[in-house]
Length: 276
Image (cartoon, rainbow, N blue to C red):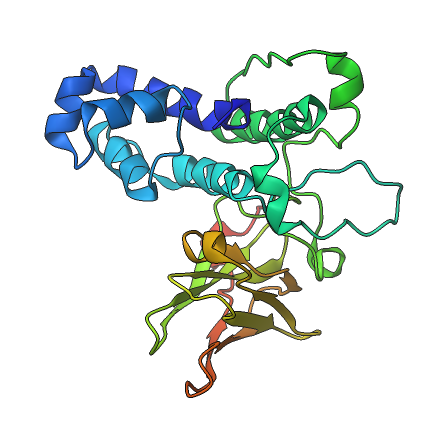
């Protein structure tokens, strides 16, 4: 765990300070020990999702903001968040499974820290201090689009990575599917991006999940053991209010059957519509 997780660890330390609890007290009130909390709060290891939720509960803080940060940090830690500079109109290079194991490239760490810190600024509504290790901070920051908002909308999101284009902040859950093999599938939807995607966990190597709405189907396959221990995200499919999103789980086991489900994206209530 390196400086890519600065946004998450800073937010966790802020919550811990709000509770007024020592590390020993945190250990007594949660399922995680004192040494574990020391690692989580100092970005030495990625905390489990449930640890983030427990700290939010103790601080009387809604967990949506912190869980969004956790998902982005987890995606980078597992090697699925790849931030690259690309010429306009050039499709992003697919993330490589081995990317998460490469930790000796300062330029990559800097670019990823810019992304995570920009998300933290957006969610916390405060000011984050970015300490960029080595090189020219301005040059490295200019290598990627510096934006605190989603990077695509509707058709422009088709087939794109929801994490890289900052659509996975505060998404809605359209449906949840527990498969006969024990895997879990969720369809997530971003109102700002007007797009949906599938999230898979508890899977086995070779499992695949496919998602589609009004356009082409997009899928992701569980490629290795690391994938089975964390979330796997499909590319996005454009989906506006009222759109039906269909997800299918295709298990690797030859004797298991394909399982599909559908969910409809909620339409905004009249009270939530912007005033004219």
